[in-house]
Length: 235
Ligand code: BTN
Image (cartoon, rainbow, N blue to C red; front, side, top):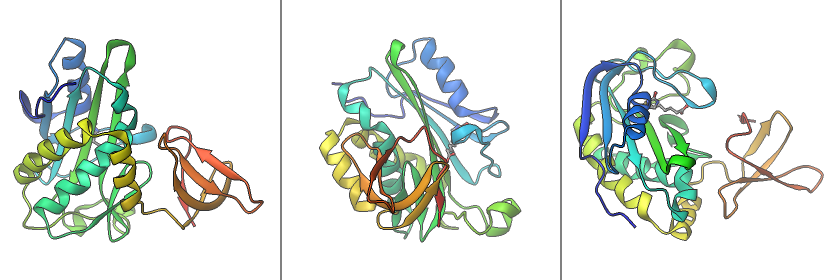
């Protein structure tokens, strides 16, 4: 088990394509556990499911951390990472965060942060990419996101968020999976809500031991949805 604190070494760029891309290159070249890449601005930031991720320069934490070697406990990384982000957000701003499965971080029903994890099991490493809207003003979000996106706080700083995330992500990436599952359940924003996906709809009933979303359908069936497979809609 490795207890190296994330954040050392740190590679910071004023502008780059994607912190995840640079972190993946560094990991492939042998960069150690704890390596973090940050940028003030990304010109090709990537989100989940092929989406792009944009943020005005200097107003978001754009962060990727290398975790290696991969261990059994890392099977719950997709749950551990948003927990760490939620905790870090609460440390630097007067906010209360929930998590929309699988790994969006919400403040009062609006997304303030997203997580993109890219894993190379055969090489034993993962890159945890995190984008946190720290001090983006409402009118700085693209029009289509204005109703659904939010930021931490006008007074919060990117450096403060970075420091808090290095600490919380170090803890949560080492945590026992049972502790991760319990903490995730305590922040689950979907539980009890009506949701729909391409294959059906139903009521979110929490997560199973592997982090799949459990959904009770109208016909009484309990369906398990894997994070990679579905585009969820909230009804
Ligand atoms: C999502 O919610 O779709 C995930 C967004 C992840 C964005 C972050 S920003 C830092 C890192 N580099 C990227 O290209 N993406 C992640």
